[in-house]
Length: 203
Image (cartoon, rainbow, N blue to C red; front, side):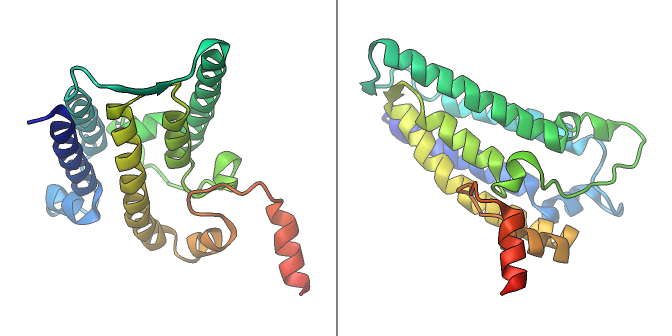
């Protein structure tokens, strides 16, 4: 079997694992009689997802190069990737990296979640997905494996974001509905949201 087919099959397995593990129905099965997921669940989920992703990326031994950016332009693309990576890290910081990884959940403190609407979350509802796709698209060396990863990630991010929004609607209700009406789904907007709201109220 060609490496490309192996990669696609492994990515689908990763996507299924990642989606099922994040679903509320599966969490309820794991929680059993408890009202909340076990404290160790998020950390175990993130760790398993990391190993599944590494398993997926290991499918290619020699991936053909489709194109590469020559000379000093490649440095510009690497610098752009670094900038995007910093913005991605900042978005993670906004939501709480220890909480995202499941480390904070190990403590006894009850975590009160709130809807983040500042920074990149003011421009787009799913900045982590957008910035991840932008990082992949800016690769100065594009291989078959990297292109497949970018395309399948785009599809998976759209589907995953839809599922995630159903959970957020249940969790935050009208607050998230208002956020959805003001903030784009996956392509950021750099218009002044406050001005848009004022103009809408005045009309």
